Picture 1: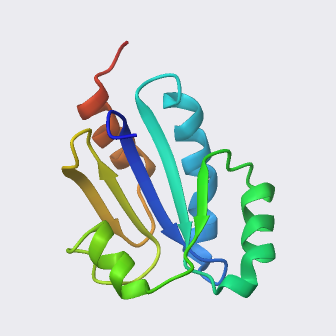
Picture 2 (picture 1 turned 120 degrees about the horizontal axis):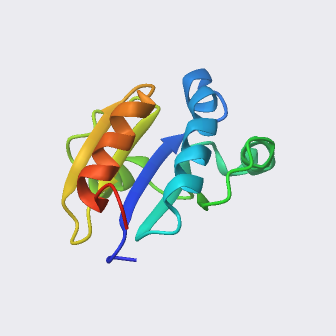
Length: 125
């Protein structure tokens, strides 16, 4: 939805920091989902690892748009954010209209992400 602020988290089950930060995204999703906000997760696990990825999402109660990449990782990275150097986890916040307002390679600092969200959505609604 192009009218929503979109947080995209790219992760994998073999990435420890990725799994550690999933609960933070669940919290943010609960905080902001009543507003023009959406959380999207993309697993870079191999497609045959889909059951493991799904289990990690269920264990962490990730009620969001969750995908597993079944395609070219380089093309995906280029399409998502040309400034992404490749390591996981990777988080990007895209404002309505498509402008990247935040990007982070490595584990997020939750407060930093919430600040970036609030800068676009505003404090109250």
